Length: 346
Figure 1: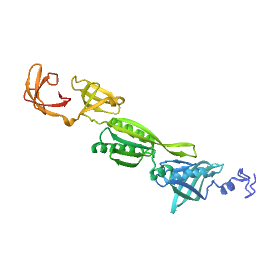
Figure 2: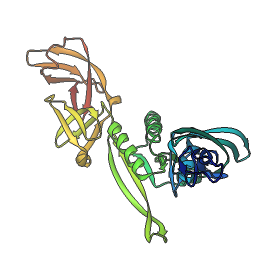
Figure 3: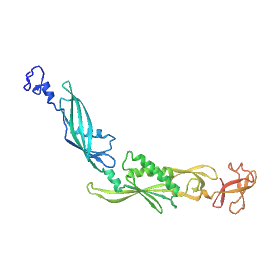
Figure 4: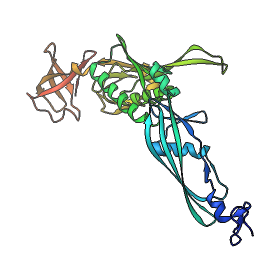
């Protein structure tokens, strides 16, 4: 057919002109002169369609992703490939060249387009909460009838820091906005309630104790018509520690282990191991500390008993032979604990 532009009659006609004229005037894409990309100045999250996303992308990939939503490709373009070359940054404006390659009517076409990228840096909601000291929950670390000691506090600080570091890789609300030292213990202000609950469970697994939650009304979100609460999570770790001595339902024993589910102790008479769930914690009585353990001397031994000196009064005391004392020799030193005027060999 006849091409009205060049007079060619040997080529197919496309859009009213010959193929050569069509390709000569072809525009592969409508590329905007400028696009805008909104990023968080703190975490580099990107605002897309009103929502914030953490994307581990290069600057070029971010620009291409944005461009793909704003560019209009020619309907004849097939197998399109795009690349962005960043030329120069002037303040918040980045000058770029968009390289486009496509197949059109069996021919490979390359075209370049100048485009500016405007970077708008603001603060995402999560980072805004972090910088403002926002918190949803408070972990209240307390000890029953005592103050947590320096070793316990150091261990708890380490556990919290290590786990916050892990959780924050997936949850930006995993942060401690404030750590408050009080005469009765430590308060940790946590960005997210779920993170605070997770941290408290981790602490309970290590130190045992009793958890309790207390919500407090802090205001009302008028836009959503909902009350706003903050949650105080109390963890009360026990008065006793491992190797201390407790009484439970008539049994007196030495604490072997403490975890998030139970207290395990060994009965001082039967040597049986007994576990107590934390729901029965109020039934446990601390009767001696590990620091109360003393040494005494075996002064006599018969087939049925040994005689030791009371570690405080030095009175001779006869103790019935049991598997723990069967092998002791007269004159040897043995550890004992005095509880309710009774001597127990350890």
